[in-house]
Length: 316
Image (cartoon, rainbow, N blue to C red; front, top):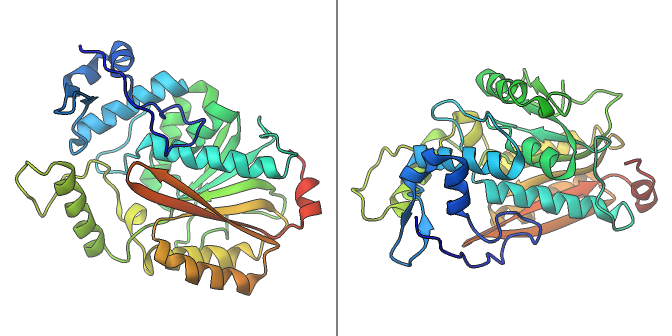
């Protein structure tokens, strides 16, 4: 196979392992199965067809094995298959955020406990956070099948057994209720909220995405999604903004039990309304941290109810 040096993706976080693209020579050595999906495009760059769901899943399996020490990872058919570089970026920027409350040093190890709201079936944020920084996680989801699959991933990767625990949210209208107890102390909360307002909106977006990924292919209005996604992963009443507002209002009930609440915000148009909602619950600190992967710009909003002194006294 032709060995090609990829250019640096300067939009990714400096510590992101995927900043220099994918080393397909190494990846295919580790997993020969990936080789059948790799080709050299017209720009003389090795790649895969990102509109092919099996190719994307095989790439993810190989990346997790090669870069994060995960030997057994799979997801059920039609569940969300996440782009790993972007997921890793969120974790690295969370690490930078925590360093602000720790005299500039990124806290590592099991004393750092993250809560992943909507862990999905892929368990990707806890896997990356544990592999890179040794953090522990609690992952929650309303989907029974997603929780069961995460359980399988954890059980078949022994190093995750003591690092990641799971809890199903049994009431879909709540985010933290039933999850955070009076004894809990989470260093941070992460969330990739459902993006769309309805199943129809999600389907239209998926159609555009798949057709754009493979413009030479015959157009389709019923795509096989390369990143998949079940209802709870893709849409909810009120969409992204509605979910984040609910998250903000609920967070005010647990002000001393989390150092930083955070959530991804895909639509920049939602920021104004998010800030207005945050003002109603009076956090001590609000930060918006921009991220960019390729042509897509994203960001996450973080808030804390702890004063600067309380943040600095947080036990890592």
